[in-house]
Image (cartoon, rainbow, N blue to C red; front, side, top):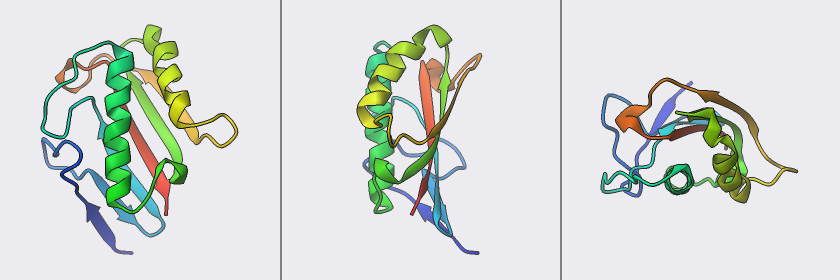
Length: 126
């Protein structure tokens, strides 16, 4: 099985040895996105503002692969503080409706890159 690297200037560039996304067969595995703008500026607001930027980045990576949020089958949400779950979920629910939402895991972690409040990774079916 071949793999195709997906890279777009419309989302933050990788800051290490990883790809924004990798297509393997019918699946697209997207790296976790944090609230950085495409030019690398950190969104320092609350979890609501940070989650909005994360979804902007996810949509840009998906678009580079010719996909949209409708193709997402699994998400993993990493939160610095589970107390932020409801605020994150309010934003999340604007992008995925309950009837067709992907499977999801949400976990609290001790620390995220650049000390952000949220990171989200997705898997999409092409």
